Image (tube, rainbow, N blue to C red; front, side):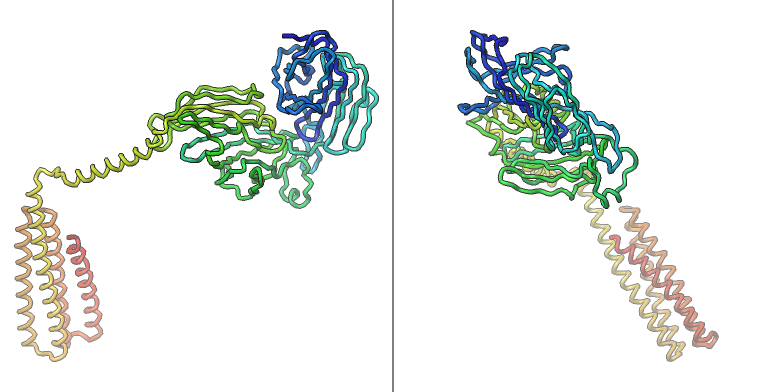
Length: 585
């Protein structure tokens, strides 16, 4: 491959170690020279054994006056040696010929590398952490000159290693070096014990759902489980002290999430419901959401929430004929210095797509694609294809675009509208046909019976009207008798009314007999009606007897009034029950 790496020499190394957040970051500017006779194609970056398992990201670009291309260089992780560490092989943009020099800027992010010391703190206590690293730039090549600059969150350092000399501290920075002529793979461990109250947030599980529609919309929803990975809270939590003193240094009260500038219909909720304490700010190149959990997060505490939004598909979905390309971010910016331990992304494509191909970012090789799934929603017939992707330890540097290429016949856009039209048309036809069909065996006979029952019931209503009028006339007769006390006229008229009521009763009996053959239920209703009518006649007779006693002076007027009121209440109740029976038909 035209490489003689053993002849490379680091002529100048400037290493900046940023310990401000919970993710230690190294920016290493390396200028090296090829002192061999053959061209070199690669540069090997070494990770010392103690940091092999906490490297979350390694990236490299070319630095220099004439370097216009600032894209990341291809990097491949080689085998790990327990004594020498891990090698990341960086591919140079061109062969580095003999005596040529080049400057690389290598970015390294470490995860879970800080140790809480102490591991537990009370509510108002400051958070202290311990970090161990190498004072020298760890390299398989010898280094002529180098220095390391450590940046702390504050100027409060409990302790720090003060060798190898020279070591200088100036407020928030500690400078180790410069050191001259450092041999390859040299190690000298240093410890830094310092205060760090910045948010120690970690997402232990994130599920990202992207649903693509050819009708102009892409829906995105993220389900996030998050915890505070700093020093655990010791003792009880006091809400009063938290609000009054505002000295909970390590508590996370709020954080900011960045969404695409075209995001709309944003929602933020948890298991209880919508969280109204959040706020949205639209900016030129993004939409910023201030996420404020229902309670502050202390060490060991966790929270859960769902964040969703819509974006127009024309910004991310491109096509030429029936060939489509979806180009989107794999993950969003959840919060500053984010660490997503486990991410599952599911991309739901429209129904009837085929020839699906997934292309992750060329610089992100730690993506695992699982077997496709099927998702069914409204009006789906064969189901929608779901691309399932997982990734571990996703950082801010992993916010990069992916591409999905697929084929979709545009004629299938009419599938769902035609499905609705055909379904409605079929339903209308079914109702029309059902209305015109007769499923009754004795349809005509049943109609005749219903007509006869209706006719008899109409006659019953007419006889009831006559019956009611005779009872009203009888009431008028009683009132007249109280006034004129003419017994002869009273007896003649009363006898006449009673004879008419008997004829009406006979008519009721005849109607009951006629209807009994057609409807037993209706006959029973008429019998119940007759029973109530008989009760009313008896009460009317008592009413007449009570009036006669008043006229003959056998009872007093007060006793007569009380008895008459009681009897008329009974008559009113009977009439109500009769009306209920008649209104049933």
